[in-house]
Length: 597
Image (tube, rainbow, N blue to C red; front, side):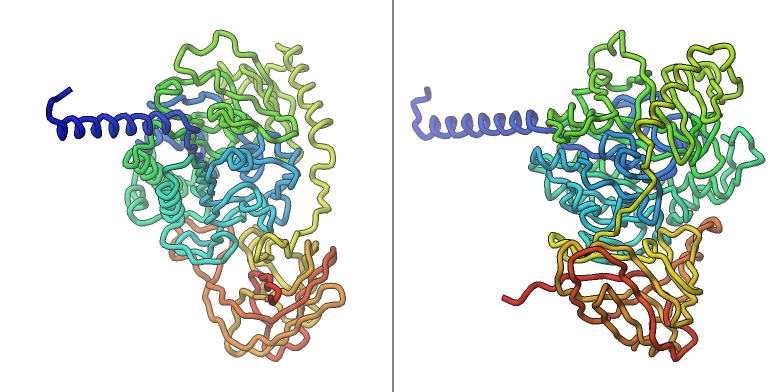
């Protein structure tokens, strides 16, 4: 040791500091990995440059594939909410009561355990930013399904993507700018705030789902772009729609890159598992590798999705995994990779894909399996080589990815095996799943506010819904005292509530008396303030939409109401209409008022 005591002490301090720093680094590298899941909406397998589409460039997602493992044949559901349910639970969506995309059919049964429940129980900070689409009223709300923070919307589609009305932990807020950029901003903030503990960030983006809105930066790249990679039947393709969809996909890629850059900046890249997949096939006829089917179809093109998983140093880089896999596999795979115990007592339909992700060679033998594709009454089956479509036709997908040649007669045994799988699914999974008697839960004691949108209501009389798609709709033409809005509800716990109404009303129509009833309880108030709003959204659309437009709705306080516990019908009606109509109605809210000390 040095004869200089001060120098020796300094050296000792340096050694101890470095040792402590090394231990800290080792401790962080051996704790549970962070997890980020990107889920895009209506983006087909073909909407990425890594899969051969020459119309666009998705460098960040492409780079994920180079640094991780890409699954060649990964399958989801034909539409949105079932895929989300299968990802969340590891189980086929009918088991969780999901049978529709709106008016309550999108709700995931409350006895299902989600991936967020699982990771939260293991000590993860959990958050979701984007489109939820598995229930709105707590505890169907994300904050009742294992997420500690939620910012986004709970419906299937949204009517405006620029500065829209959103939900932040149950409170109604106004978004900032383009929603995908906004969701990503919130995710980045959450990552920064939770960088010292394991976190799970779920980013279910809502694009390129319609309405086809995207900032100028992205649209300008495609407004006059020649589309060279075309749908297999070009006459069916709406090229302007394709341009808009691809512009939205490039925006998604940019936002994925922002999150990945955040991981790099915080030195979290090696400690973070990143997954990217889509919820169904493309929402228009556009290039999709020549496959048959699009969104809504149980054919290959309707249910094939990219799946990329990256975890540097822990899973293979640049590999394409050939065995078929599905959304039901993601919960067990994530839990297995993170060494997190499964807490659900229900059996899973999915399996862990971890053996296919190891840096060493893929196992020589991965057992063949049969996966089911289902929507409505249509059920198809897929094994490693063959697809049986919902009409009973058999296709050899290894040589006929476009499903042109029916080989059912040439392969009767395989046809019968897959038909047996379909029969078992119909007999064991489907019975009664779409017979929904669940009321909408309101007034839960663990959640301050309940939202009851027009989407979840039924009407009597002459009122009309603003769109044939209920998700983001409102009611208009409320002109008679015989008209009424009804919700079938279950008041979870009695209490005093402040009732709010989101509406528009022209100045000449102000003054209607409206009434809210539940059982023997009634609250009455007057629409005293005008809220004027033209239809919004059209000026931001790149393609004329099929859904209805929305408005800038204002809020009025109807008053306070004491709700008794129990089931019944919550009814909103009018007793006096001095103008031409009552209002355009969008949303009713119930805020629990705490008891006085």
